[in-house]
Structures are given as structure tokens and as C-alpha cells.
Length: 415
Image (cartoon, rainbow, N blue to C red; front, top):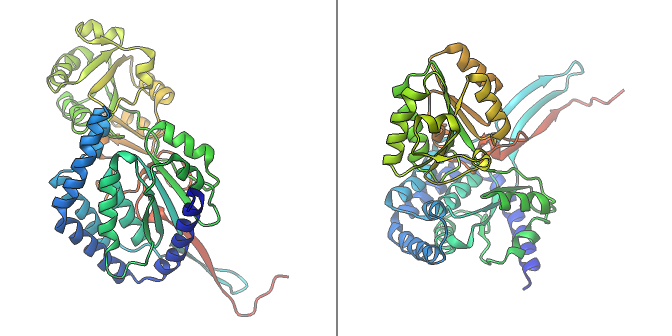
């Protein structure tokens, strides 16, 4: 079978499965999700062995440290995969929920209700946990899903989807993984708008741009995260140190990690000397503007390209600014509309930051690492949308539904 024929066949089967999924009851879906979680935990050792093969190949190919981190599974990460399935099962089912009821003067009753999207294609790099979270969210929201993971995670993804598909009661082809590593498969998939309702790409800029360019299907992109934290002149500097350290160091290879630190000039000397010392102690390479380098001469010089960089690594750029206005201008110019934070005790400055920063999530006195479906109480996420239609921020169950109108009449006609 040609790649084109294979993709058409997969999409057709997914469309058929989506019709079955839309009819499933909430208890049935929740039972399947819990069984999936048990299956993941029961076969933890086998998943780890499959993942170990992927990690060895990735290291042999010389893939980046950040990508290898996203690829790597361990017992704790597998526990979290199972936990995300259980949490999705515990959440209210959005399908069938009445959003609004209107009674018109002519007696028509109009209800706006949530319904499944239908068929979702998920194209992503590295992370095997996405295979589980995307599948679980699609199932609960009543949609079939076609998964195209990166070749670097092929062994992990194959084994995980095998476990998920062994779940009793799951419609056949509700969860499908594209096995071929050919790039042609993705391009063929992106033209199947007769069968697929939504494409979600999650990965590097090259992947996002290719999908947007090639797709005839609506796209919601999980784009890059060039995240900033601004330490205001009225900041609690002890709090700022804890938050900045967490945002940069806790897991640097992910999209909501801190990439550029902005610091008010009035607190720069007091704050940066201790902050930089702590960051360098954790292995962070610091690159700074001229003002920050006068305070800490040992750090590297930041260039224009650094303000545009999503490092996904233990690298941080620092800029000393005159105040809030300059910080806002910098974020407006270089930010990726993902996650932005301010550390301050000044309520007026905090409110101005919240109002004027254009991002999917804006934080006061908290780490950008918290922009996450699980942390937001969504159970899991299929991605973090940095665009504005139809979803923005962490995409959970509600964001994986659309709506339709139910119109109840008694013989009304239009005059």
C-alpha cells in the first residue's frame, strides 16, 4: 500500500471510530481511562525497556540534551502518565453540556451544547507522555486521534499505543499511531480535510511552520515558548530568587521554562549577584546586557539573537531595564505569547502587567513552569496554544470540543 493510500485508510477508519466514540456514555469512557492507567502501570518495566532503546539511539545520533530529556521516561514520569489518565477520568465530561439556553419571542427554544470535534491529528516530537495524554483527552472528549510522534520516540510510542489499544470497549482505530518515519506521511495526512477535523502540531519552529504551510485542515499550534520573568523594583527579592531559579532550572528543556530575565535597575545589583551565583552553581550559562555585565563581569555578552532565543537548555539571558515600561516593551517585541511573569509587591504594577502583556498565561509572583494543564486542574493537556482561535493556553477537555445548536420548535416558520 502506498503512503497516500495508507493515510487515507487511517483517516477513514478514524472517522468511523469517532462516530462510535461520540455515542459512548461518560461512565464507559471513564472506565476505559482507568483501565488504560492500570495497563500503563502494569507494564511499566516493558515501557522503560522500549524507551531505553530510543534514548540510546538518540544519544548515538548526538541529539540535543533538551530533546533527550523530553524523550526520557523514568518510573516517576510513567506514574504521572497514569495519574493524568485517572485525573481526566475524574473530570466532568464536556460532551453534551448545555452552554446556553435561549427562548425566542416566537417560542423557539435554542440550546447551545458541547460536542466532540471528531478526528484529531496530533504531530509531535520526542515526548512519549504526549502519546498518553493526547489519547486520554481525545477519548474523554469523544474524538478519535491519529498520532504522529517523532522517529526518535518510535519504540516508546509503539509500545504505549499497543497498551492503550488493548483497553476493553475502546472502538477499533480510535487511537492510531503512524508507524512510518517517512515525512511524506505527514504531508499526505495534512491534506485529508474530508476526514480530519483538526491538526495540532507540537514541537520546534520548523515543524510548526511546515504544518501551517502544508495543511488544508484547521491548525492549532503549540508553538515555541520564549518566556520572560520581570523582577520589579518593588519585588520581594527572596521570592524572586526562588521563582526565577525554579522557572529556569527545574526542567529547562520545556516550553514554559524561563529564557530571559528582566530586572529593574533599582534592585539589579542587590539581586543579580546572588541570583547569578545560584544559577551558575546549577550549571546555567548566563548571558547579559552591558548593565548586567558591569554588575557581574564574569558572565558572557548577550547578543541580539539571545533576546530571540528559546534555548530549551541551561542558558539564560539577562537584561537590566529602567522599569516596567521598558520590560513591557521588551516582552512585546520578543515574546512568543506563551508564558510571562512579574515578581512585585506593587499592586498597580502587577495589574498593569496583567492587562498589557499578550500571552496565553500571565503570572504574578509565580513560576512560568506552572503554565500546564495538570497544574491548571485540567488533568492533562494536548498542548499549549499560543494563538487566539479557537483555544488559547493549556488545551484540556473543553478545548477539544466544539458546539452545535439544538433548536426546539412547534411549527414556527420564517416570515
